[in-house]
Length: 182
Image 1 (cartoon, rainbow, N blue to C red):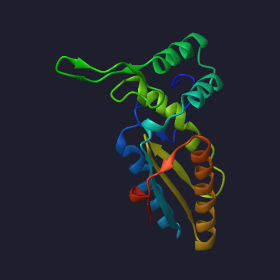
Image 2: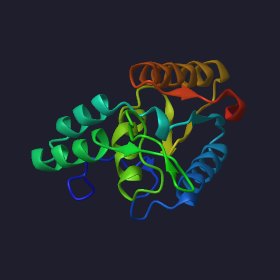
Image 3: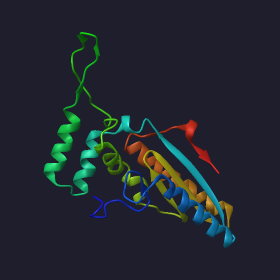
């Protein structure tokens, strides 16, 4: 996916050259440059609640196929996700295995890559205003810049509405306790 350029530069997290600080550095640079040109910056920080636990396998498989990932690899990923079971053990007692129907496996090296595939739509299309929409795993930063506060607010709201539509389609929830506006 990296070699085929399927991820936009604004999609951070678990990618070569996309350390945690990269998005912060880009934001700081853009805000500083805007300030030098007499612009103001408005930003919204969003956290997706229980992000790995709410990934829809059906939507994820469709995204992989839309990205033209090899069919055999998509089938392998589907088998790894759809055929997972878990059971609990306490001493010599063990529960019956139960199929896991949602969530990306915590700790799996494949999960961050699959989550990037799942959230690529958040950062891949940015419609209105000067600024960016960037993500790092389940954290999203949206900012818009300009000289007119009403235009900045309108552009920021438009982008937040687009992200809200994405959340509705992809069964993601924003964690209001971790969201902020500046």
